[in-house]
Image 1 (cartoon, rainbow, N blue to C red):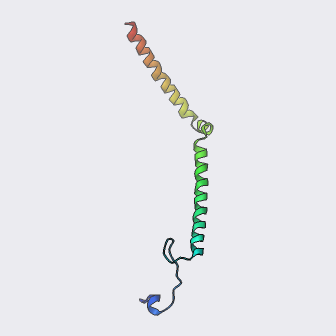
Image 2 (image 1 turned 30 degrees about the vertical axis):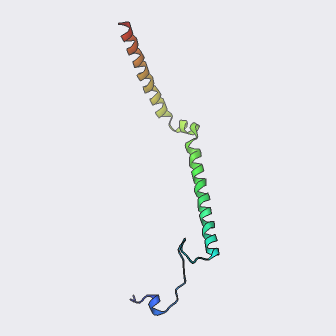
Image 3 (image 1 turned 135 degrees about the vertical axis):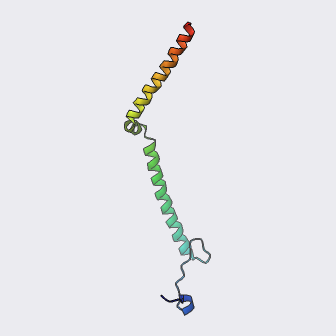
Length: 92
């Protein structure tokens, strides 16, 4: 491996500006904008799909049926217990 860089040897290097770097051509800027728009559109589509899946309550009910039944049973016992305690205290 040589210790000399291409700039030291006089070999011209192609200029590859970074996005946002000064000195880019209008075509480079337009291409960057088009690329960013395409990436944004794809991200928005993925997000819409995720939101649709997460807000589909029928699917959520189907996927979590056992947990919902268990939670409803526990809530019923707790509410029933409080009602029984209130009646017991009132009747004393």
